Length: 86
Image 1 (tube, rainbow, N blue to C red):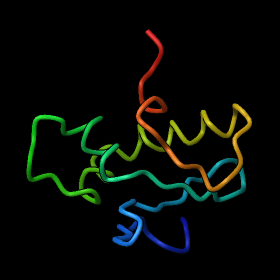
Image 2 (image 1 turned 180 degrees about the horizontal axis):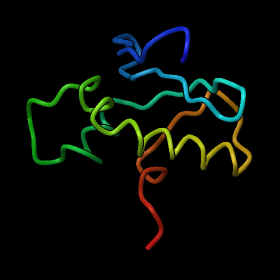
Image 3 (image 1 turned 45 degrees about the vertical axis):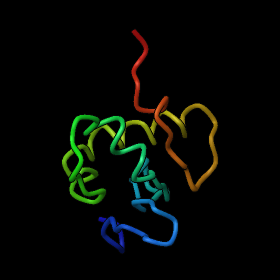
């Protein structure tokens, strides 16, 4: 497990977290806006950290895809990263 649990960083408006890939922990973040528009578009009272926790598996899979595609860390996820190709 990571040294730190995921947390909301208010100054940047992101949830910061770590994803285990192989033997390495990869740092990543996702903005509260991306969390809202991807997972809770129809809500007005959603909170970033609970939204992240509810969808952590999909979010961590997006980090793995970005790293596999050659991205460097920290990975900053955007809406298109969470949309699977049709």
